[in-house]
Amino acid sequence: MILDRITAPAALRALTLLERRALASELRQTIISTVQRQGGHLASNLGVVELTIALHTVMNLPSDKLVFDVGHQAYAHKLLTGRQKGFELLRQDGGVSGFPRRDESAYDSFGTGHASTAVSAALGLVRARDLTGGSHKVAAIVGDGAMTGGLTYEALNDAGKLRSQLLVVLNDNEMSIARNTGALNEHLTRLRASGKWLGAKRVVKSGLTSIPLAGKPMSAALERLKTLVRRVMVPGELFESLGFRYLGPIDGHDLESLTDILAKALRANLPTILHVVTRKGKGSPEAEASPEQYHGVSRRSQRRASPDVRPSAPGMDVPEEGSCSRVVGDTLTEIADLDPAVVAITAAMPSGTGLDRFQKWHPSRFFDTAIAEAHAVTLAAGMAAGKLKPVVAVYSTFIQRAADSIIHDVCLQNLPVTMLVDHAGFVAGDGPTHQGVFDLNMLRAVPNLTIWTPSGLDELRDMLRDAIPAARGPLLIRYPKSLPTRAGPPDIRADSRIAILAFGASVCPARRAAAILTDEGITSSAVPVRSVKPLDGDALRQLAASGMRLVTVEECQRAGGLGGAVAEWCQDNSMPAPLLRLGIDDRFPEGFSLDTLRRGLTGADIARAVREAVQP
Image (cartoon, rainbow, N blue to C red; front, side, top):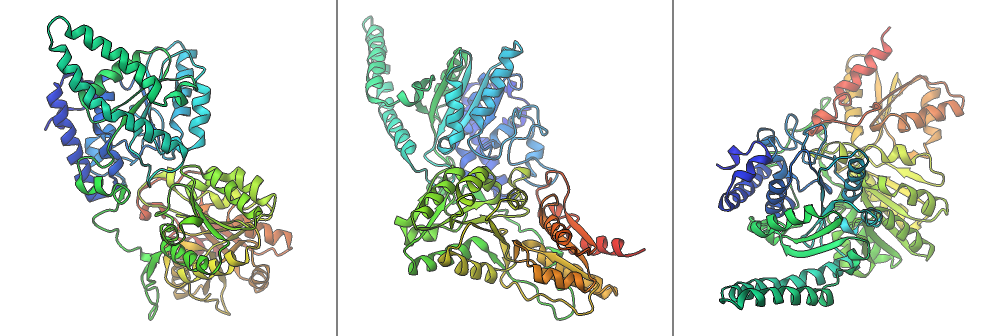
């Protein structure tokens, strides 16, 4: 295989064009087979294979700097930069990350995992280069989906003042995760359509240059005519008005043309946008036909069951788990059937959040803001001010981007916006950029905001039915990817010495720990916490007054989380109950499997920590 000979990008320059085309096929087959086995992002990576080869051929990496937006299209980049062995364990402990990481390779110039950051980061690298007298090239690959995020335009507006080299490659595949929406998408569609005549132009040019004597002058005239027509017909003024030179659109799968134009674009001493049209999922008929379905692919072999969902005592049933997003989609649709004021909003993730069903049944009341979480929340605030009942569904790792909108636009005005925070807690596969461990700690201090935390699908369903029709005020409901079908009642024993408080995915390990400790003679109870803000003061007072030692367990940062809330409540209410707080220390969670991420927070780990705390 040609790929076996590529240990660094410099080796690409020794290959012929035919060899580089064969290499593209090998890369696609490697990505497909690995993702089918390990899980990961498929369609987005298949679409940028030729683009990645061409960039690595003309750039002098790692001296030159290449920044990926989101980074979920960097698999070919990893394979071409000496990480083939680690790629066999893609997104698994001991293997390579599914996203660029500066601590993984010198070829990863900037770590990414969220959208719309690449132009800002690349501009920072350019300014660092210029201030330190460097001469290396800087390029950013930005998907058209990422172009729907406001941060990209803040960066483009700033970068347009440059008088030095910066290349932004606009990888236009008509999609981010779901189909793109909005005026920008329509603009790019017009640009894309203008490329349809490029194939005919190449045929005409080839024919003209073959005519003796008059052929080349006629071809040159055609080039001048093409430039004039493009200025009139192609609406590239959007980028040119921001100070960028606009090139394209060009075929993102034509290796020869790509390599040639990228080399020329990188030589330009001014900010340049190269518009490349690619096919998401190219090389896999299934992924090409259904790029949204094949955006992310699950592992072929499922992870073994966690010990915390096994029976912990004779007669205890194994909790049956189900999808939270499916419950959200079904329940929200049912609520909207009865209440025309209910509207649903998401930021480019209708299927991931379960809102695709709502979109199907209530299309006029469904709004996809594209990759613009802050706008989604402020849009909801405006709708609430207009007497609607908006529901915003966003993953935990992305709701971070809307913190100011939540504080300033929703909570300060005490507007009835319901925010559904999916994938809260640990998330397998995607690494530290996608862990849902910060939203609670960031937002618990915000006045007027209520935070609910279901521990079962039945409880999540009841919370939605209670909150949305009533629309009382700002509400955040946070939940993991999956929960047990039923939350189950609190199993507080009258003679308990320990009360283990937990919510969401931590309730099962809390129950397991309580069973272990009780079997050892340290009678303990697991107490699901259904509201982190406000806390149930009566229940806490009863637990503290009974002399129990309180233990809090959470898949969140300890600083500012449930443990902090309980400690504050005890101090404010003069209830000096001994408290043990278990959660994530002052660090970013590392690891790709849930087993690794949950080290220290399993049932056995909780029981061990309690045992050490209570023993003299």
